[in-house]
Length: 232
Image 1 (tube, rainbow, N blue to C red):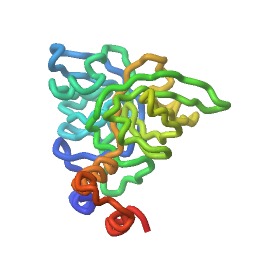
Image 2 (image 1 turned 180 degrees about the vertical axis):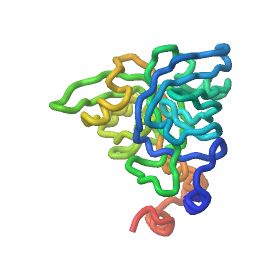
Image 3 (image 1 turned 90 degrees about the vertical axis):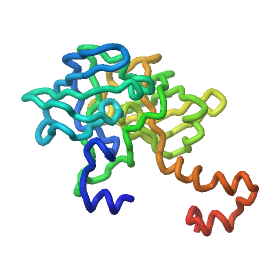
């Protein structure tokens, strides 16, 4: 799959990949439409260098298609399906959002593979300062938590983060946030109780899909895992 992507380059509007490394934060300057369907116009700078209509862009971790690009802003459309599954319905003029352009064949992958297909909406449980860093707890749903493992990856509002703690009974994960990530994303604007977009690691879903027939038949064992390449 990745070979096909890199051979042909970006697939605007059809298939896009992101890394969860935020390029800049933009500000919503206009929101036009209804509660069920609307367009967001977002002020930005860096990402406008080569952005064009039809490109895919992650806005707070939500993969959207660019409809229009102006000198200092761009416009994207949000469908009813997207709005129902993300925090975009709560967006308003003046709000800050995380922005990342889709991968190109020569992009360094510094985070992890993010699709921009949000699994659901979680919330911030707590934010604590730890020396120069922050430890942030997020409340997830049971459906999302099943794909979380210690030291695994997760995208929160499009930010690639590493899971540093799990409280399974409470459906809570913890992440350790370094100063650079905190200062260069919308995390610095967040407070306890704020909603966030959550996308779990796609590879965890593929593993579950592959293993589910074996699990149903009760045939999972060390040999199966070794033959599948999960252990050596």
